[in-house]
Image (cartoon, rainbow, N blue to C red; front, side, top):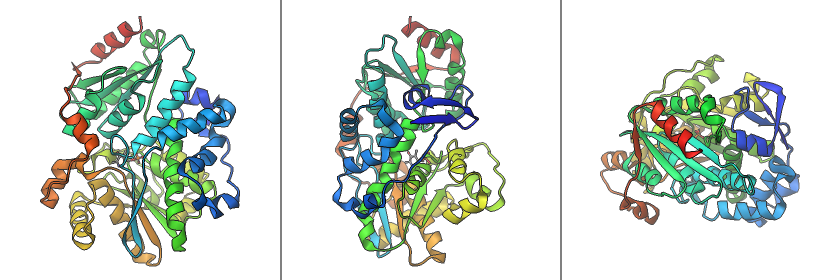
Length: 433
Ligand SMILES: *Cc1c(COP(=O)(O)O)cnc(C)c1O
């Protein structure tokens, strides 16, 4: 499969190159040259297929012959070794639980898939690949876990000191081996700026191959389409028109849902639910895309002021706003509304949502005011314990800590404390020499 840069369609890459580079040399995001629909029989018989079989059919065209079939199947088996259940809350609202993986947020699937692909591509290579990633919370843990022990790949994670939750910090600082954490005195934006500077720093890039592991990488973005197909398999027998409400920050997950739709999955509508970082809801109304600095909220994995994957969504709809509006609704909600939703869902159904899932739930409710007969599935993107302080304070209860989390809570944090780019640079130049 060929990919091209959204900055210039003449700049193309193979799957392998797109995964290793992360972003095109012209700084554009990679986009697949074709998205071919699967045969209708795939969707007619999807309930007879295993999750791995579904994933293989979906991803095969994006990988092409660059990973042999047997190897791709074993990668998918490794990536999808946990459940993705749909839990029905009311007659026409259900949640898709994406938190049963090792770090209990949905980013596990993308991070593991990318790690496995990069591991395959670096086999037999003499130079090490360094994955450099800034995190505001969930990405770091998922990437650390996904890449742990992958040969030929070192991972360097930057996170803002004091601004990630206790659990999130443990998840990215306690693994050791090929994972190194840097605790940056500063904000997430400072971390991200250090990463960007390193990518342009030839004293580093002349010595080692750097790549990034955020959702701009096609190997992290595309496998997220599995969620929607696996949900469809479970919900299709309801015989209702399905809408997906996706709590969105960088818009990678929802964009992968749209890829599933391009593959032929019957779905009535997508709902992009955001917190007060409302660049996309505003765009859908006004047609003007105005990025702004991000605002901190209780659904902090979605505190994004300039969502990087939105350009891919526009590409899927050929930059036609009217077409996009037919398929995508987008609403923003405040922290107050989010907390009220968490309480309401719990008192009405006994189901405990995390703040991100609650934003997704609000999206479904809003959409169903106009479309009461639709079947709304909101994505529960993280387990409530990952946001323990907010959940405790809002709900007045302490959820039970699952074993994946207990496992890391007592481990010793290991991180380099840094305050300047030079300190990161010294490390990166020295490890590769
Ligand atoms: C990353 C994340 C999101 C946002 O996903 P995008 O693909 O960036 O839109 C939502 N919820 C949780 C819990 C996350 O970790």
